[in-house]
Image 1 (cartoon, one colour):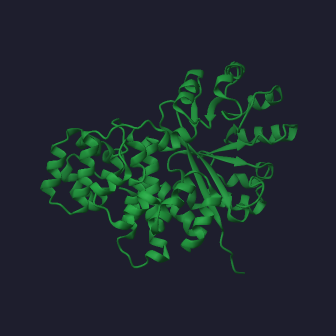
Image 2 (cartoon, helix red, strand yellow; image 1 turned 180 degrees about the vertical axis):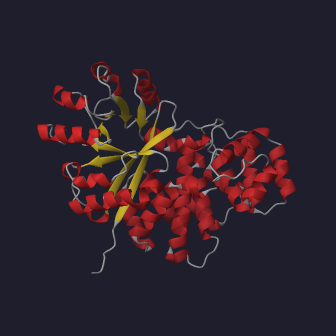
Amino acid sequence: MEQTEQKYLIGRQPILNRGEQICAYELLFRSADSLGAANVNDASQATASVILNTLAGFGVKQILGNHLGFINLELDILMSDSLELLPKDMVVLELLESLAVNPALIQRCQELKEAGFVLALDDHEFSPIYEELYQIVDIVKVDLFVTPVDTLEPSIEQYRSYPFKLLAEKVESKEEFLKCLDLGFDYFQGYYFAKPALIEKKKIDEGGAALLKLMRQLMDDAEIDDIEKTFRSSPGLTYKLLLLVNSVSFAGLQKIQTVRHAISMLGRAQLKRWVQLALFATDDSHAMANPLVDMAAVRGGFMEQMAAATPRLRGNREAPDQAFMTGILSLLESLYDIPMHQITEELNLSEEVQQALVNREGIYGDLLSLAEALEQVNFVRASELLGPLSIPYSTVMQAQMKAYNWQAGMG
């Protein structure tokens, strides 16, 4: 029997700990057939099966890396034996707020907890009817849209007598994050962390300017002596780059000690990628857990994979690299107080890449818009963009999985 293409898209949003480091992701799956439906949360058993098979098969490590994955569960999936397919040490099962609290639900949750699963209550508001579940679940997610942060304190006091941890979701501003931090929340999720436009802008410093110069040199195939000279002019740049490179596992390879060593070990193309990522890295040992570094790498990696699969770019050997660079550079304007047209001029980018970055035009502009739609979990917009690109949904999922596992592929 002929198999029909599985038309699914994945959304992934980072969850951070109190140190603002990524510790988990919430995963959202959407069937293309349900994109226009009035209630996209009514997952059919067929959709549930694909979700479970995707996570239980080769995809789970690629999607999550070494982090936990939070997954929303409908009642039929929660009660199904197919949950046994999921790796218990890698997932958090989220109980939707729409689930009715009854003896059957409580018994099932107790069974899952005893089987080794981590359980969370999604979009939760305190109520005595959850008393028994409060003794079972590991995490309670509080929706700041439903319960504004300024009204939370009474609920927090009621939660303190229970053993679970608290996660604030839909954190939209630095002010909300700091208030939740003071209230004792353990985890945080929302567009404050996932959208770089909300991160405080800063002037591009000496190190950032040197990185842009270095990127231009690498694009122009400059001599290695000239590249090293740029590093010598900025000790902070050298530290930042080597910190970033050394923080990723090289499958047993030796640590990189010098710039020349990095170039010879990685090659110029890979060094160019480290330079691009270093623009987003913080100067600490947790550089790779920075949500903005992760977002930049995933966006660039996804666009690279999509360019290789785009019919309109077939035969263009430079397309994947151009697409990767477009994805990385598209975030710079939000991070630094520097206009995008100035970035494109300084780097002497091709007309196609410039139009993509400045106006979201052309093929690279379409791929960039697609990447942004998926980051914002705007599946309807993503589906609209896919039509003209003539790329199957299965290819998009494969591209997403490879991009999500970017650290493993950069060594």
